[in-house]
Image (tube, rainbow, N blue to C red; front, side):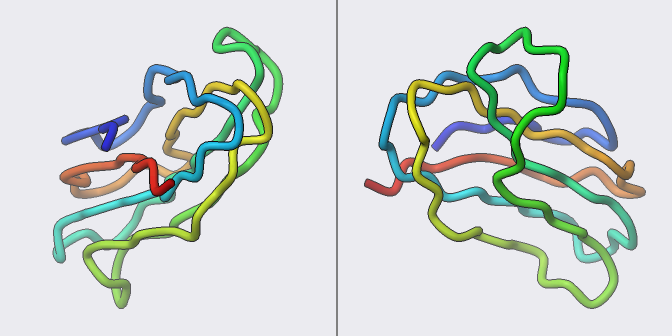
Length: 103
């Protein structure tokens, strides 16, 4: 498991390299008192890419959502870089935002 963000309300993680055809699961854990926040997992071919990164998954956290979400498996399309990013700031910091290699 690779932790991308922990204990933050906003921002982006450092991009991490993922090798071709690795299966990944995206994971978000947050406090049950969280009422707002949106986190996206994204990929790009270059860790310094300044354009729009390709979306892997999006999580809107808060009222009525479970405190942990494990996303569907994702297959890296090649040697890419993955990051997590808040598109809407959280009101309570998630305890962990991570990816897990599942195969």
